[in-house]
Image (cartoon, rainbow, N blue to C red; front, side):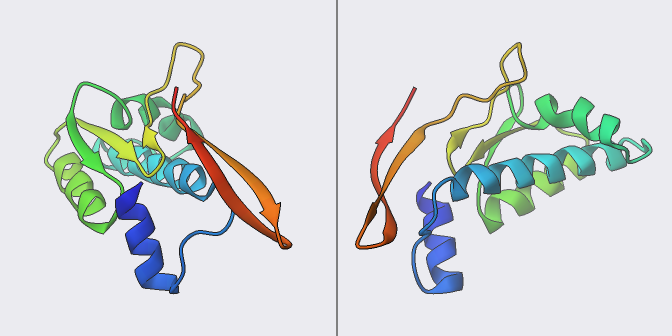
Length: 124
């Protein structure tokens, strides 16, 4: 989470101020990694191909790669070389369970002075 927050702050000048930005980021990144892995495997890029590669880029086995520019650059390089990766996202591990769900930490948000503010981070 720290790398994502630091990158976000550097880009936008303030920390993330909306709930679920970490989870949304991870969802987009996992889909992109799955799409890239499908392309590297010379598969037609379809929603089915992306679906079929989600677990292989977001869970063990594989070399752990982390959220952020450096981690994603490394992830794409490893995939290009035909190696397995295990993406660890901005919100934590992005490992799919048998039902296709990802259990990650949960942020508890509330409004203070009309602005959403994170109050607590609960981990599974």
